[in-house]
Amino acid sequence: MDRFSSPHLKKLRREKEKLYKTKNKSGLKKINTQIKSEIKRLNNIYNQTILSCKTSENIWKLFREITGCGKHNNFASSIDVNTLNRSFIRPPNVLSAFNLTNNTTSDFHRFNTSDVLKCLKSLKPSQSLGPDGIPAIVLKKCADILSNPLTSIFNTSFSNNNVPSLWKDIKIIPVPKSGSGDSVKFRPIAITSPF
Picture 1 (cartoon, rainbow, N blue to C red):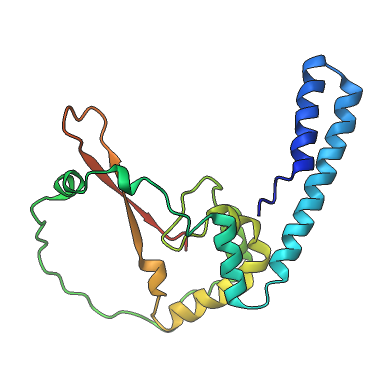
Picture 2: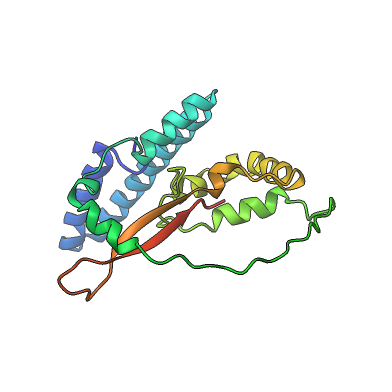
């Protein structure tokens, strides 16, 4: 499901390009109105689809469909595993022991829905997928719907001193170092959940 695309919308955009090249201002104004109307129609369909998901199973199925999660990519098959492993082998860093005192208090600052909504709407759409596979654009576009349940999850999580384990997971992406010569060297990039 692509909320910003349909065969009709693609056709309208091609027509717009032709009108732009011919500098037909009245035609451009008309086609822009049609494009806005089609985008609004697609958004309504998209929002109704999200709202029609009554079970968490259906919601996750929709998110997987939107994000393309579950589709296999060929990136892993194109990498020599031994070379990748060698690039990450380093002597361990030994940290000196330190004493953590338990200074938690029960009167932590509670999250409110407006703050969570503001944070969700400020997410960058181009932000990469976290380990949960949910793109930032989905969180941003569904912010009005998600802000209330997420606020509840955040408050419960912090009051119980228990952050959901999925939010603590990271995904390590190997990125080739530039100018590394003949042998391929990688640097690890850690991708975390936006939560």
